[in-house]
Image (cartoon, rainbow over all chains, first blue to last red; front, top):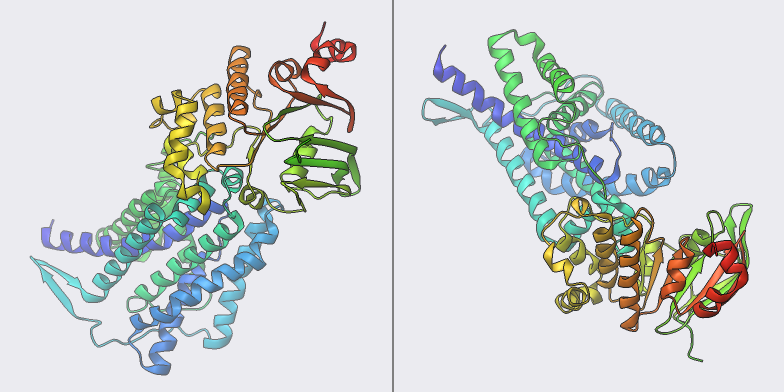
Length: 293
Length: 238
């Protein structure tokens, strides 16, 4: 086997896996705190892609500059959705919330379809084909940018959760909502905040992906949601670190499968690993059976 | 008599069209340890929910520290200085005991005095320092109950509300938990202790109320109630 090509594939898989991790972290954070699986999560990633396309085509901005507007907008949008849709369903059976997020997914996808039409969209950036040489491996600049954005977003999230009072309140709410409420934490506010963070992370991933992938309005969202789900279940649902590992594994498996087996089954490799994990370690690679106090 | 810190006046309480507590009154004065006892389904938990603001009042009113308790949310009552030690303890299981205690002082006023309060709480319960690095879920039921009380005290509350602290504890551990509660009361902290375990409550409380089928049937000092024939027959098995 050609070592350089192998390293090339692993590095690509690692960088694309980082973006999968970023999508997965948003999903797992929302699940960990709110016990809600957001089936519209991938659609927010697609919204991020279209946001970047819009800024690029309408104003001529570099697609990455779209982050300046897209991230705050995604945060506010997420907070509003939590406040006006999900928070009203707290008392309802879990499938109600699930259906609400599924409905949200359909609404987002079809609004995009209405605005942009069914043709795939992308952006042309002058540096799309530029690569950097790292030893014998060539790293694409857009992949590297995606990796760096992921790293920055994950670091910021980690600092927020571990170093701020609000971050600790988020962890307390995830651990025991009633307990958190009784020490004086407004857990409704925490839920809104967390959903806003989840949608922001999804949108960042979308902006990171647009120079690499074509955006399309309705099909891509559910694929991203599925990948996020695979990523989080690989690691263990509700655990941010495990989602990072899960994302990297998924990225590498996909790229290696595409390179050495058959390229048309790219999306299937992740699912095969997913099924294997469910059969062999249903709690996830790094999961523990949780015990609650 | 001093103004009571908690004053429940003639309240009807319930859920929707259903009323489960009728015309109940009770008060807790400064520094008092007051028991609210009764069997399963007597309405104790409903009164407690109303006091902590989780449900509103159909009739009558509840005043905490001179102000009305309206249909509110638990975190607002924490802000007003009511530390509710819930049934089942509701600790942050995968966090350390120390982190549980520090989270007890989340609110700004409590946070400002966090280190001082922690020292006070650890002086009151010296065992806490011994397992401060253990994860809360790994502790025994009795130890967890102590952490739950300590976490409530970290709020620097004006009053403690305790919901069935003996639940799920072995009899010998119940005695220990009750001694701990008395110890907290001896610092001058007013406490409303809601319990099924009548004997244990009457051993440590200053006064107590007996609730049956949603109505207050008896109240008095713990000493009087211990000697009361009805209480002896119905609850103490004598």
